[in-house]
Length: 319
Image (cartoon, rainbow, N blue to C red; front, side):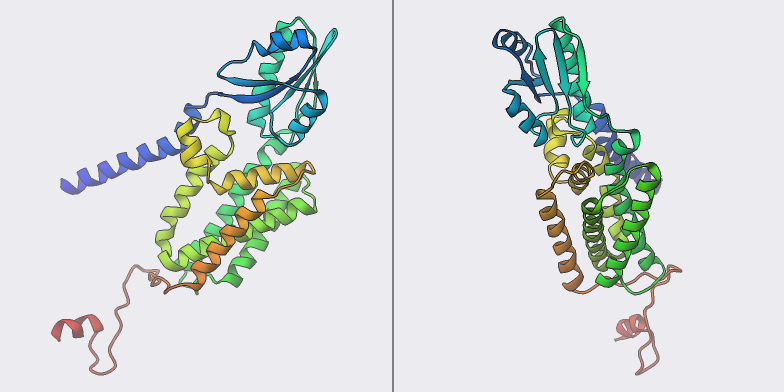
């Protein structure tokens, strides 16, 4: 009875934590201070600015400043108002969750002013919206499965060379899927994909070296909770999720970096992030003693002492 209660409680706790860290992110999505830019004559700009609220942060700027802000992804959309017309400008390199909110809000502002609205942007295809986060998750899963198989099959622990081979092969398979979906990554995007795969594989190999199969408890949890957060922009997340999960998850750096590079953008912070992750993985691979490999049949190998022929565990007991 006691075992039944303990296992039932464990299941309830795990379900609660997974719901809190995954579905809870989606359930609490609500816009707050979404940055938008408006270009308009002074009288119109004042009326537009009055539409500012807790959900959006409307900035009235010049046309040149608006284009710079949009290119730098400082705002999710720009509304340009001219006599008799209004145009919404979006950047496809910006997270689709942000641009969708921007388009809805800015369309409402233009329609409130009684102006016809044009959207000046190439809308990303479904594959382009999916590719950055999907590629990040696949790179993580590929390295994780390779490391797990090394442990389960009682092969040698995954060394740095094995991790690099895994990263290259997983990058190739992921890039092949992207091309099949209709998304063709350029040289910069492919290089970034490889860098992310190497960083993931080295970190996972280091954790498997020290924790053995128990590393799946960490790696699996990261995989379950991170994509739900990485697919959002911080202005749509509950502040707790933004601070506790979004602020550090590597999936959002890989997804945002790849999205920028697919549209000929540039990345800087992301290179430092994955360089740091790779360094942590190398340190784990080089430091300390590796965990004892579990037997595939679940039997612990206690060994036989050469001196008296007794199992080591029995010899220690008799001593």
